[in-house]
Amino acid sequence: MADRFRIFHLKSAGDPALALPAGFWHLATCLRSIVFTEQESVPVSLQQYEMLRGERAYEFLLQVICGLDSPLMGETEILGQFKQFFKRHRGEFTVQVQEMVDSLNRDAKKIRAQFLQNLGCTSYGSLLRKEIRGQKRDLVVLGAGSLAQDILPWFAKTENKIRVYTRSPEKYDELFQSQNNLTSHALADLGQTAAGGVLILAAPVDGQWLSEQVDLKLFEQIYDLRGNSHVDKLPVSRVTTLQSLFANIESNKVRAHKTRESAVSAIKQKAALLSVLERPRPFGWEDLWAYS
Image (cartoon, rainbow, N blue to C red):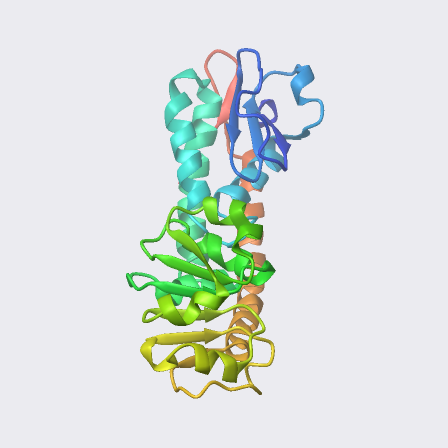
């Protein structure tokens, strides 16, 4: 029966080496810890976890696999993690868990194809990465504060070389060491080393001072994320302002919210099928009907 299928969930990366008895399978991602089982017992190591069963477990898993609860809605990294996890443990699963996994993969593919294609970006980092994607241009970032720290991780796995300029580079050693494609420089050295590529202004520097430090015409594109970018305008044409990006993001958020509602509704319908798509077995037990 579907009710035999249970998951334990903790919204935390958890311990990758979580101690579990046989019949429990653990998946640890960067955002959550999920344990699959058909066992009725609750190990001590899972007492802090939320438990979901049957239809509710299926609905939750499908939302996660589809990236509906990820920072970037619809992202595919979590789907890849699930596929690798299922492939690694498939030989250990019971028949019911195998069929549940197969159904999750089929339904995730359909939900993604129907609702999660060509989604707009809903953060400055995701939007900038989309605009710069595929271009091996150097990035010059002014500032290492909260805005820059939100943006930089989006470029951690790209081929872009990033030079960050800030007044006190030593204050951000941990940030700079976390990305292999990033180097830090003192703001005072801006005029000597920054030339070409893409300039991202993520610090409240004065426009006139910036123009005196570096020839802005050398940059192929400038993203001006200063709060007063619409007032303190830079004397070049290839500038995208904070206000322009914000309007784009807000429009995408409205569309993404409507898309998420539709996708969640479709997922609920698919999860509800678990209670009716069962078939009798010759030996008196039942399991899920593999459906398309």
